[in-house]
Image (cartoon, rainbow, N blue to C red; front, side):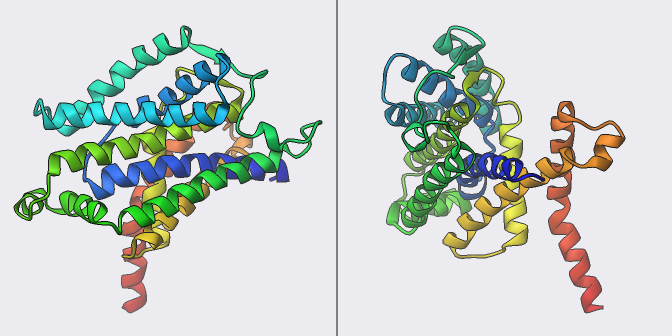
Length: 300
């Protein structure tokens, strides 16, 4: 793998690390099966694209993309909390609705951004010769801030209440926790991270597209599982670190698989990205069982 391809895989992995941190909140902390991610990821990109093409500062546009994702997460949680719609169905309804919302926001299935500024623009050389390493570095800054924020937040009273809600909502309510509000907050945070990742993604790709969210939740969940398997830990700062490492490794595995001469020889190519993704997710889901199997073999 060339250095440019390596930095590209790192860049993609760090973007999906934000997605994985969002998935960590919904799936692991709140125990909420949330498919809104497939809609909130392109929502963040769509909001950023429209904002920046209307002259809004790219840093503010990125933040607005994250805020739009928070609104999507709030809607999913509201459908469940207020209308008593089951969690999975509520997220599917919002995900489906967001497809139309994203089309209305952009006004077209895609929106080019090649001549527009981005959060990376101030750091580029005049000839863009440092682009391949500047973009991953800036995205790493976003990921680091997100990780440190979550490490701090889940050590606060509200964060601990959120963790208690996910473990046992009935017990949390008995202790005086307003689980409905906690759920609304947690889902807003989760989708805010995912939408911000979408906003960063369109900046690296040079355009927003309505279809970029397909499979987002699968990638995020795979990253969480890979990270937890490779770096097990009970302390929250270890858990967030594991999720980030899992996302980077996952995208690196995909880059290696698609760049493998052996796979190319038997007919695999870029068009098989979703197939390779599905295979890697299956392997990621089986990693805990495989790890347990080898542990038993070593003890025998």
